[in-house]
Image 1 (cartoon, rainbow, N blue to C red):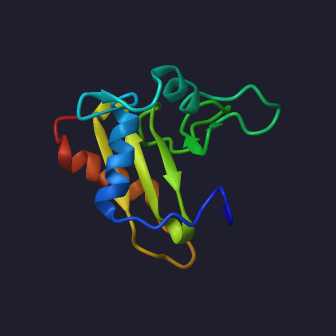
Image 2: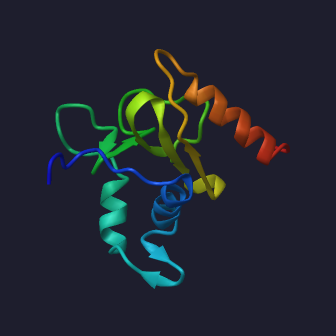
Image 3: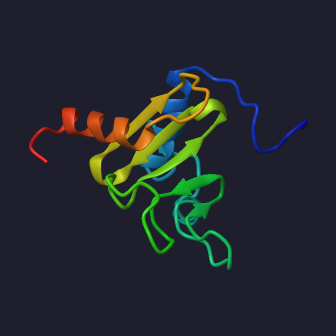
Length: 124
């Protein structure tokens, strides 16, 4: 394995499937592929003295003193890649959002995902 933390090339559909696997607590098409306990630990704040809002390669919205993305639900978490690519999982909204665009510099991920959520659920 060249690098264990990155360099996974996949389609948007495949990234969405990974997000859906996590959203469904390790189940895919009714089959338990990941232990439920592992999914819970992977998406829970860690016990370190460092950044607590990080679990098993997932950036968590909660766990530190302030939310990472204040306008998104507290239970949101994401896989984040090169040039602002991301897979955002929001269990309370039963939603997985995938962005494969490349951005050099700043990208308003939180604001754009909030706008998508508002469009999907306009009564919130």
